[in-house]
Image (tube, rainbow, N blue to C red):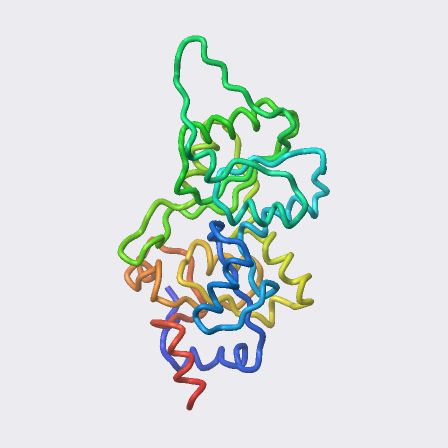
Length: 268
């Protein structure tokens, strides 16, 4: 493995940060860009919706850029962030947390009804995931001609609380994927779709960008796949032992303990 540590090497990336624009990219689809902007303001940070790129927004933009028919509906296995972004993009959608309250009875004569006008199923992180939603998604993808199967991301786990990791969106995606025997279109990190949209929005080149993140298989791979410099911070998902493990084949350009290390360097 390459020797990629030390503040000296981190210093070499500072020109990429000084006076440059910051854009926030997250695979968490539970919130919309509006909701994240509100959260930033509560922390004393002025970040506009246009500077935030979520996997929920990416899913809506994928449909829009691919001329998804306005006569078709979208079924959502996920939360309010996806529903809000779809509605803002002008799409009719349903599902989400509301369907988390629904139950079924597996009786001999039970027939599961579904909306045959559903043209896309979007699956993201869903704390209300249940058997009803899995069947609704499965039957739409399997029985509605041309129905798209879109995943916001495939993260296996995530820090949903500060105390421990929890199952990520990838677990919900895997359940639906297994039931339909089909792979989804992934729009979040490390997929290049989100980066392509970001580059067009800001007229940027990846050679002038640095991807900063705390996860190797999403953040760092996302940056590498799209030609960015990469900086791994060890304050989140990936630990130093995981980074240095012989089985790991994803290596950032540099790594440091936290983003705060950059502040110290900038003050020197």
